[in-house]
Image (cartoon, rainbow, N blue to C red):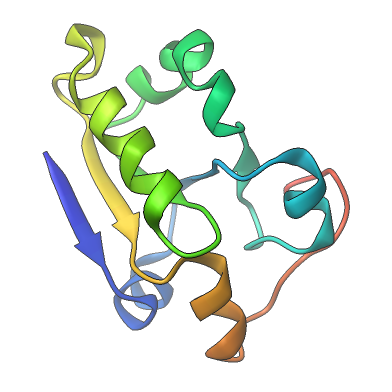
Length: 109
């Protein structure tokens, strides 16, 4: 199941959640949501096991299009049938505009 989630809802529900950033490596390095793991969209099929290990996964890109494509692909995989997927509306761009913290570099934190 795929749900859209706003920046405000996401910021309030952070807790112990996994966040996957499906942007390209260079975009991720320029600034990402703290704790987000970079799995570029083109590599999602070979990383399905990462998604399947969680009950809930938040997926983000720059504005929400690539992350929705990733969510649709993941939702169609039998190994991920139990995973609740959240697409971050507006993506990292909206996160930045909202004044939320970003981290640069190739590490999640």
